[in-house]
Amino acid sequence: QGQLVESGGGLVQAGGSLRLSCVASGRTFRSLAMGWFRQAPGKEREFVAAISRSGDSTYYVDSVKGRFTISRDNAKNTVALQMNSLKPEDTAVYYCAASPLILHEGTYYRKESFFNYWGQGTQVTVSS
Figure 1: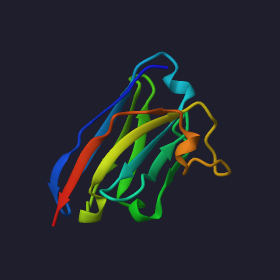
Figure 2: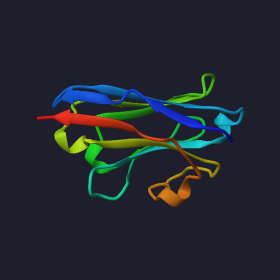
Figure 3: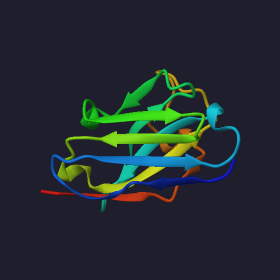
Figure 4: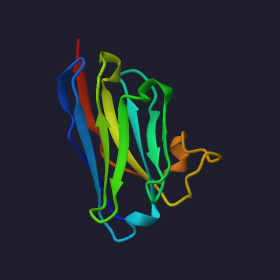
């Protein structure tokens, strides 16, 4: 399938915003469900958001609902995570992930095992 490369991480003050991007190589991007996970120091990697192949369906962990927005541009092979009203507890390494499975409410998209392909991660640090 190719690679997933994240960008856009950095240091921001609480209440600020960041936009993460993930570019996928290969020609089958539009056939992949995409997701974002994060891993804070000393914690397990957790689900953040996911988006269906067409972009019609999106899902979020409760802690980011209303603050984060996942979107995709199939023409550019990119998926983005717009993060607003950032909190110190959002500090983590953020990972982009891709899955050939169909994403819908009944699937296990909140689990890492749903996704086959992963990026290298980008650090997001939110200072208080």
